[in-house]
Image (cartoon, rainbow, N blue to C red; front, side, top):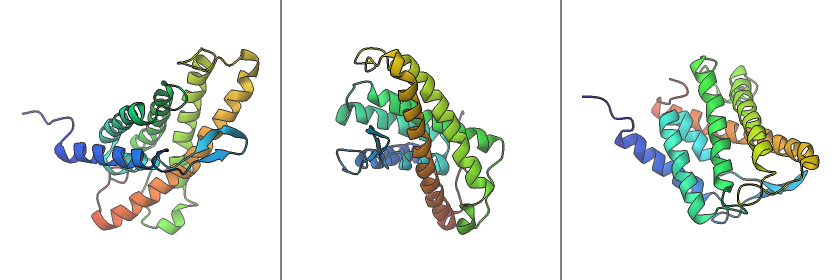
Amino acid sequence: MSKPLLDRRSLTASILFSSIALVLHPPFLPLAIPAPYAPFLFYTIWEIPLYICLFLFGPTTAIISGIINFISLLVFFPGQLISGPIYNLIAIFGSYTGVVLIKRRKFVQDTNNTKNDILSFNMLFIIASPMIFRTVIMTVVNFIALPMPPPIGFSIPMEVMPTTLGLIAIFNSTTIMYSIPIAYWITKAVKLATNKTWIFK
């Protein structure tokens, strides 16, 4: 008998972490800081539970969680464009890809020392890889989509696209710089209690 792709425990985790992400998303939690260099972009914390889900349970559970969150955003908070949640989903999956890659290459090692992790190669790899993947993927997506009229894009003229893409690239990179470390440290704390996580397996 073949093993199911998603067991009950993983499905429960998917629903739990996507629900937490939704609750942390505006307008449910009005915690959004405008980027000082681009006030139309907002720093939030709702992505963090999705990365914790990835670190704890692996890519399959995290992908399901991301899709559930995507559907929830379509219903509750599509944003300025109905296609906005699609951009979010692609950005999340791009970040996932970077984490999965370094995990498969065995770059992430458990140091058992949370305090020293902030300056470790662990932290460097686990930030740099999803940052690069997310930024590159979203730059390509935005280059194609943003010049299009709503509901796909914002009809942005091509002459201002380089500046716009640069600002969004900075945003995507800096979002990873706090989201991934927070998720990582929470996962380390959970590991101390359960001694069982995907990222350190």
